[in-house]
Image 1 (cartoon, rainbow, N blue to C red):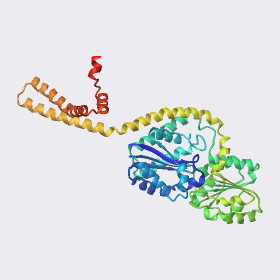
Image 2 (image 1 turned 90 degrees about the vertical axis):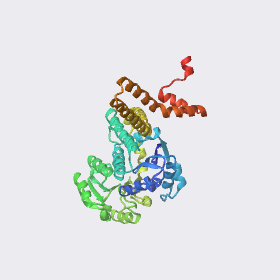
Image 3 (image 1 turned 45 degrees about the horizontal axis):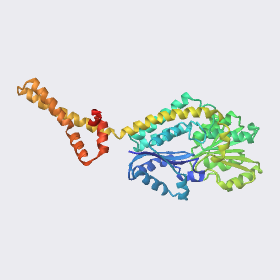
Image 4 (image 1 turned 30 degrees about the vertical axis):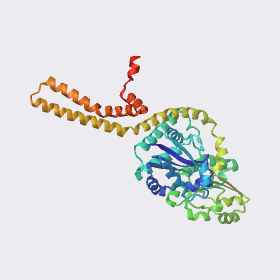
Length: 423
């Protein structure tokens, strides 16, 4: 059963394309159900982050076309652009890709650890939806295992480098006297948690956290001596913010051009750094038209991120060696799964023939036949029963000139050609 990894990421598609194929955690269950109902799809899991959307699936020969058609029907504004951005890996290549992703080797930030947690969430969502079976279980568990080995055996996780770190580092470059400035954080997820931690470590003067859940905002803000508010209170505090870092799960922009114009009038046009690391975007793109706004999207952070990667390059080379070795092992295991039903049936049939012959032998003993005669009969009949069907099939293959089947049979049963024996 073929295994594929199908998707787009930050290397193949800009943010305006990625945001069209992003899936909110709340809709993931229905997405998985819809995908699993497609013709030819046997198992499916979806990984959706700000930098990538990927579908992992085991399917038959028609399943790949069904998945592609489903993606195109998602309301993508430019199907041709999507076609150019999509990549697809199959079988061993899909295993290798999944492991690279889990280890952070395919991330915008080389070696970033958040992706492993996101892959675990994708696995758990597929489990909850009942769309994951033995094949994808092996794939994900193998990916988690190799990611743990890479973290342990290499230095790829050393020196904090992440999108959140890059955003704060950019702010630190623009505002030298950090202790005199205010940061407004939109959201309270893992990325914003990291941004809050880095801001506090850099000595930010004041921190405001806005979230759909005010309680969660207050809890996160309290960890760093900040102030928590609800998202609908942003307009009352926007003018106070010198730095805005946004990463929510909203489907529509939270900060609009009219909101920023109103805030700027109160700020008397003091400059603001705005970093939008959400997909879909939280800050309307037209906000960048304002003269005193420095707006960066997640794609704009790549250069800052590259400058912090030198220490991880050597570790990444070692990590790739580990991934290559482990991916071959998992790919071989997955390939072997296709043979499991045939092996199980073969064993069940052999045991049935054994039991049938054994019952007959016991009846012969009970009838007074000698043990030697019964043993010879048992050996003869069991042998004939076990080799009857293969013998018939081999004879027919020979008569029809089916050399591939004959060759496969010789390999399976360890039978050499008679001509080879003569030589």
